[in-house]
Image (cartoon, rainbow, N blue to C red; front, top):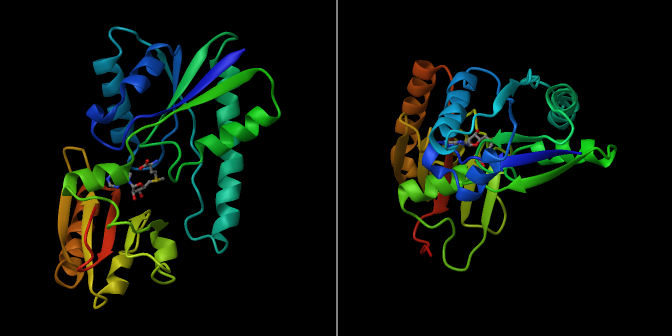
Amino acid sequence: MKTLLLVGIGAGDPDYITYQAIKALRRSDVIFLMDKGAAKHKLNALRREICARFLDGHTPRFAEGQQPEREREAADYRASVDELNRDKQAVFEQLIDEQMADGETAAFMVWGDPSLYDSSIRIIEAIAARRSDFVYDVIPGITSLQALTARHRIPLNSIGRSVEITTGRLLAEGWPQGVDSAAVMLDAKDTYRHFVGHGLYIYWGAYVGTADEILIAGPLDEVAERIATTRAEARERNGWIMDSYLLRKEGVAEA
Ligand SMILES: C[S@@+](CC[C@H](N)C(=O)[O-])C[C@H]1O[C@@H](n2cnc3c(N)ncnc32)[C@H](O)[C@@H]1O
């Protein structure tokens, strides 16, 4: 039997790692790395730093999967994601077959938490559903939204109210019904700009928890252009960007 651990490692600062995650990594024989694109080098360096700092001399092997890329401008977003996940499933399965011996434990160091905008759980579950030679477990991590709210020193929700966690793509379709706070991830197109003039406050953060962290907060009407310029410059400087933000109706009490 093989054991797979999907380990949330937090979304930036190596100190976000939990003690449960450290214990999971310490009992792993091999660590699978699956990042892609321009950010890959930095994100994998952080994973290796976590292992060097926290594993108390334990030195698991590293095995890198060739992560497939999603077709960016695909007309059918859902179909392109399904296709990507099928390709990823083949890569995961190859790692399990070729890089693990029977009786071994492998860890996937998942950015942030595996439950939030991450397909690892779905992919591993799909593989597990048709094989009986491995078991898997999930270890939670600090999400980028928790990192964002902590760095801005704000609660996620206003008093007794709901929060919508959404993407730039969905926000572009309109403000979510019935909420006064929207946490927005995966926004490559500065979608917050659509809401200038709507009485919103924004808490924005890029590379949160890392040495490159940038934070900007204020009334959206006043800071939207500064965020757009800062974001474009940071993206140009680093070759990639990961940012997220919370939009809140102004005048709504937090807690
Ligand atoms: C594919 S999702 C993965 C989210 C991750 N599983 C989590 O728990 O945060 C990637 C998105 O998370 C957000 N993100 C991840 N890390 C971040 C960070 N350190 N600072 C700001 N946003 C981040 C960005 O919106 C990015 O587009």
